[in-house]
Length: 457
Image 1 (cartoon, rainbow, N blue to C red):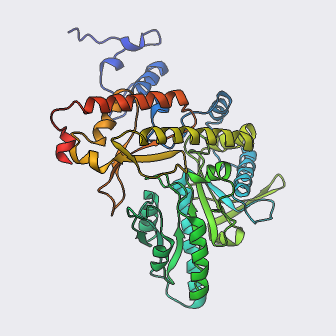
Image 2 (cartoon, rainbow, N blue to C red; image 1 turned 90 degrees about the horizontal axis):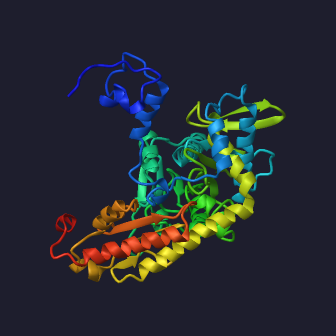
Image 3 (cartoon, rainbow, N blue to C red; image 1 turned 120 degrees about the vertical axis):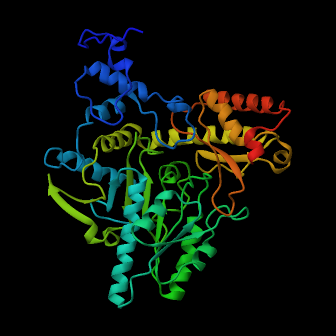
């Protein structure tokens, strides 16, 4: 092998350079500079996905925006949201987005600027909603002269991990209502049985990550109203609508899950999921400013706008705000409704086709969000030589990412697969996926011996 070193300069072919013949730096910064083309290619080559983003049906995150949205966000990549002196109109656009979202959720607040905040994803938005509920509870306990050392939060075991993080960081007891085969969403009765004077809030979910189902928030609100009257407590609801917050207003506008319900005091969602914006962006809205503790907020007054800003992070990208505002202008209610309904129709089509396959059983009879899960039916599973983990691996060979996993504690003996239908998934692509599933199952049924995952199961 020729080990003669050669000089790299602007005329060197990228793959003829020294850098491409040696490992990328992993521990120490390189001593020498290289050309931008070579640095670009070294980083780019490491970011090749194992599958095409639009074939990744595991993620909820937006992987497609139109040309103008992408251009707008690329052009604003250097903009720091928090730098209001340099980019004052970005905060104004953020306030407009909050107004639009609050009104989508039927806010009763009449002020010019609604009470809300943006976050870097729905996780920060959840954190902000939780912190506000905790601070309100502390203030109430302080006024009553009662101890403040044992706060708790109640939600189902179908929660997203951010809530576990929130409770650990703020030292709040997380009380989980187990999901069961009979009760596949949050049971209002069992949730209330876990509440007491130290409960900062109950958190139902619109669009459970594990299953795609919605908790019955209207039923919870009704029973909580009677519970609060009976006990004298003032337990609120924070809705984790990471997925459903941009689905329900467009595909099921008559469903009461939002601020039309008395005890819903705050709602969080993800702009980078069904808000149709590239990551990362989240939003949280409070019923009105009285539910946003003063110690969480600071106000700015410029260009005739009084806007309250709240957040766990200080510096943050502005591009996603522009992307969200662009979507609201570009799509409007009509466009969002069309996109979300198309996603729902394709999800229902896949749900029906998969449900008709003799080896599978859908977890739920109906599709209420553009995602659903299914399992091997009990009779088939008892004699099958393969598992859904094998199907996941087989589909990955065709470029699809379709995850197999166990459901939450208490029903973690159930292995399911899930597909999330997002903007960018067409009916033709769905037919391709279904055909690949059918072909994989056909090959599995020819097996003489069980697969390693079946043996380990």
